[in-house]
Amino acid sequence: MKNSKLWIGIVCTFLLSVTGFAQAPVVPREAPQSSPYQRYTTYQVTFRYGLFKPQSGLSDYIDDMGTRNYSLAGEWVLNKSFAFGAQYTSNYFQKRLPRQVYETTSGAQISAVQTKTFSIQSLQATGKYYFADVTAIVRPYVQAGVGIAYADYTYYLGSLEGDSQGKFNFAAQAAIGTRVLFGRESHFGLDLQLNYQHIPFSYNEVSNAGIAGGWVGIFYRWW
Amino acid sequence: MRSSLVSIFSYCLLAGICWLGLLGCSPNPLNDLSAEDSKVFITNYDDTVNFSNYRTFSIPDSVEVIYNDRYGLSADNFDLAFLGRIRASMQDRGYTEVERVDTPELGINVMYVQQVQTGVTVNPYYYGSGYWGYGGGYYYPSYYSYYQVSDSYWYIELLDLKNAARNGNKVKVIWAAQVRGDGLGTNPNGMIDAIFAQSPYLKKE
Image (cartoon, rainbow over the protein chains, first blue to last red):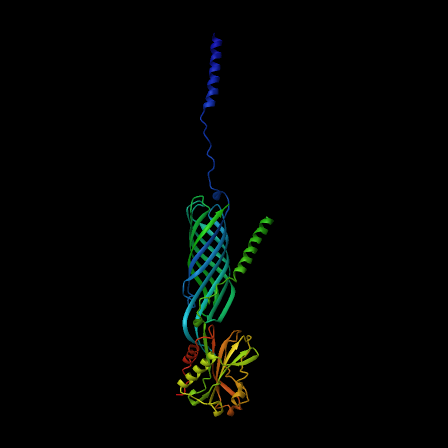
């Protein structure tokens, strides 16, 4: 009798333990939910359109706002705060003066409508530091770049080319801006940037050309 | 490691090639320039000359057309209007027109030059100095400097015939004008008025 009670106790304990295991709540482990942009070095291309104004050094020659400015940039975006890449930029400035008579050093008088142009096409290596996480909707940054630029100074008297000088120069830029994602995991977003570029180009009235302006761009990112 | 370096080098090379290609894609700044605004009026004169010392002038009845080393004469309606406006402008400035045989003190050559190769100096063939009765050729003050590019333009010279005999039968060009640009076959009055307007010293009084 004493043995049968023992056996019943063992069986009950076993059954309880088996059913207990079977009915124990399954607590799923928290799977890592981080974005691939946080885990990997990703890529980004940005196309920008901008308005730029000549600064001192160039404004004695042309002081009109330039409306033909484009930029294409490609970057490796690190999963932390940095990005590195290359940027092609095209800036174009033009100013037309009404007809007037110019006296040349040789004593000739030339009556003409004058068209002044200045263009910069640069290729620069860029570096960025972001102030927010890679997945942040709004991600401010500072940017710097150095590279090479082809600057061209040409003015026309009527349909004649008056004077022209084009040469390769060192180029540098500094910028602040922000990236605005269209969605936390979106591939696309808006890029806004204030930018200053310096080209040590000097010729006639131009002395160390500087331009400042703003870019608005669209970027695409992927991994 | 080596393959990634090759890859980076390839990207840089591609970017450089694209960039060099884009260097040639600048906009044409003269696309929106009207024919009138494209015109350039260039005048030169000998500032040692007192133009009020001359009284009479003569002008041929046709335009000399120069095409590289070939030449001919033209006297269509436009040419006649062009010559007529020069004649009227000279008269307005106080000069009296006389026939070529009446020993004018000033001679005027009018040429339309086409496709002259860069760097080639234009000289009148038909209206050479012999046309005016002096065989010593023309000479220009040393500071005369004009564009010489391959296009078409009007070229007008004012000749000092009064002092040619004293200068060994050499005829000195004391004033010259060029009109370049588009629309050279329209608005002759506008072209002539412009070159005279920027030459206020060219007057008898």
